Image (tube, helix red, strand yellow):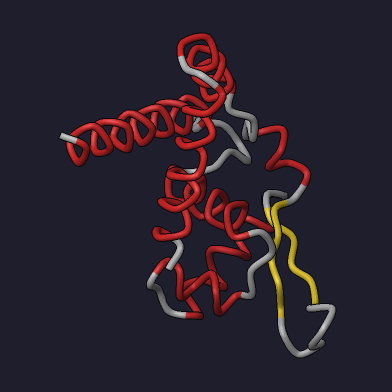
Length: 141
């Protein structure tokens, strides 16, 4: 039962993400393809990854990762820069245009939390928070 409910939650979040992603992908000059939109989202989610970390996360070659990053940079959605700790290492982050293209806030989550706060006690919500924290930690391994 718990597995099924968590699966439903995950699938609902994925569907919401896809719906929002594809609503932003438009056929106009300088816009992103679906693949580019996913690549930009991965860069955002990773923070400021190295090109190698980006490639490894996506399971693609470093030249392919570099190609994707260069395309995103040319459109203003990514910025390449040297690492603060190792100048030989190249890091990539999202560019300003990314933030105008993507909504990095999730109002549906805020609405869901608000509904939960009306229905459950602070102790129950604290337990849920710890459980979600454990799940996130487990998924990041």
